[in-house]
Structure formats: structure tokens, C-alpha cells
Amino acid sequence: MLAYHFVSETLRDKRPIPSDGEWLEHTGPLVLCESGLHASVKPLDALKYAPGNTLCRVELAGEILEEADKCVAARRRIIWRFNAESLLREFARWCAIQVIDEWDAPDVVKRYLEIGDESLREEARVASVAASYASHAAYAASHASSASAYAAYASYASSAYASYASYASYASAAVYNAYDDNARKKQNKKFEEMINATKKQTTS
Image (cartoon, rainbow, N blue to C red; front, top):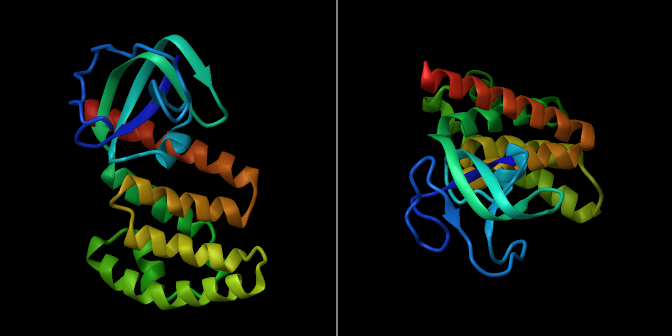
């Protein structure tokens, strides 16, 4: 089974990341979220569990247990990997742009999201904080689904956190929560397209 998996400097149990093609073996029972070698079939699902920015395409073998957004296996090996930090920033900005019309975004936030100029990133973060918190305050007070609150947070997440894989997913989740499963499908398709394009560039 082919899947996706993010890693940081080491594995979660502090073992070194294996070389590409080297099989990791798990002995003992497989328990989702607890023991075994994990990965996700869809890269957007893998992003939710990412401890770092390195994206790996992996193969799972042996006994495999599956849930909706993750798998755990007895064996796992990395087929290829790359540092996805720039990709994650781009994806987070794309997610935020999908709902930019749902809130009164400051101009600098719009410019940053549209062109990705990193010199604007800090200014965009500062400008989005007050607006984001204001939207969330209204959301908390009403206890109702608020597209504008989620949209504001998507923009804030893309400017404040997109250098970390575990936080880049916040922009994705914000758009998803603002809408429905169709938004999630659109995100998965876009994310996979971006991954394939980046992988092609790294090997050309």
C-alpha cells in the first residue's frame, strides 16, 4: 500500500529517520495511534499528524490496519522525500484565498496571500491578528458556525504558522469547517497536484 507520512528530525520515538528504501519493522500488536508504523493514504490527512516539514512517500506492508484518515502497518519504507516547507506555505495561502471574500481582510493580508512575498509575511500576520480574534470572539459568543470566523483564521494561520507542517493544516481545516466535504475534496486534489509538481521539480 502506498501512503504519505511527514517526519521531523527523528522518528517520534527518537530513532533516526531511515534511508530511502530501508524497511522499518514493528514487532508486537498494531494499535492505531499507539503502536506500529503510521501513514495516511491522502496527503492532507497525513498533514494533520505531521511533526515536521519533510514529506515522505511511503510503502506499507505486512499486517495493516486502516481508519478513515490513517493506517498503521507492521512494515514501512520511504520511497522518496523532500522538504515541503515552501509547499506548505503555498498550500496554506491557497486555502485562505478560497474564503478571502468571507471576511473583511486587510489589504496587506490579501497581497501576501495572492503573491506569497515573504517580506510581507510578518506585516500580514500582525494585520490579521485583530481581525481574526474579533471574528472568533463573535463566533464564540454565538456558538454558531461562522464562515467569516473560519475564513479569518485561515488567513491568520497561513501568515503566522505556515512554516510548520502541523500548523499549516489549520488553514486547510478552517476552510473545511467553513464549508463541507466538497471543500475537503478540492483541497485534497489541489494538495496532491502541488506535491506532484514539486516532486517533479526536485527530480528534474
